[in-house]
Length: 140
Image (cartoon, rainbow, N blue to C red):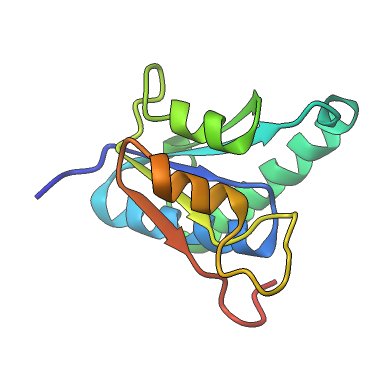
């Protein structure tokens, strides 16, 4: 059985991403792994980066407290680039993620699609195990 030391989870603070983050935190708590919460900043996001960082930090802290995981095992990483490239790079040094976790869809939700573009592309190209977590109905 493979042991996971670092779980990278993509988070854009959408309901699906929060469900994926909660799932990753629960797993990390069970297997004593670290969690790297990764947010990919787009070209125009630099203008609102401080607010994005504050919102994501609050979300990560709240969910980590709910799950009961030691906050020292959870880190936030905001990197420039498209989500697929940023998340795929998380499997390499310096993060060295053993697993990627994403929600089914992110901020750019289009109804009628089972998977969003990021989760679909990662399913096709991820170099480490990938878990795509569906958002439960009514998830806040």
